Image (cartoon, rainbow, N blue to C red; front, side):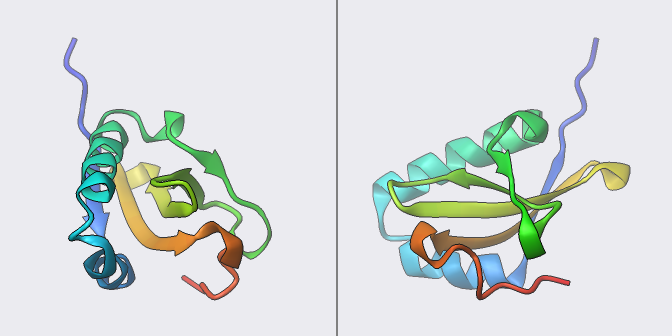
Length: 96
């Protein structure tokens, strides 16, 4: 049985946030592992968000940093939306 890999797509917002953290070796290592897990089975990574980010998911990268992503099942894609500090509760994002 062949397992299809999900395509992981970085948004501009994610790429901008990533640049702030790319020199942190532990951060990059954990993020790389999360992306590999997202390629294999995004439903089993992180938890769903509510409120204005209903339909998005988030998973911990480091203690207080979260990766926000969206699963697009019909295209078998995972869109990396943002990296944010948990304390901001993602209020500054309006992806739609």
